[in-house]
Image (cartoon, rainbow, N blue to C red; front, side):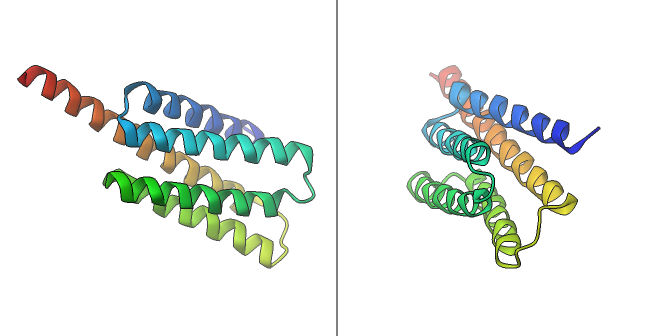
Length: 142
């Protein structure tokens, strides 16, 4: 299986996880899902439009998304958001390393990138599941 197919599978998993967070999550999960979806949309659009400067755009995009997620984390104090923040820190460090050293993207970049996005998606799914379960318990108790 080529890296393009794996990247596409990761993107599809991310979109489905974000849709689940928008559908079943609470306010924190929905806000995080919107930030993550916007991050991916901006990265893909600018990656296609201007591939020569896309590493710089990806770095700035991940930094802005991390700041937005930090704001969400502080406002909602959701424990799963700590995981998302750690994955975004790793993603930001990955882009920084390759940009500063002017290295071309390779298999390691793709692997770490896909692992980071899969981890972010799992954090969204877990957070949405916990919020959904909490609402179901509160509804059953009432």
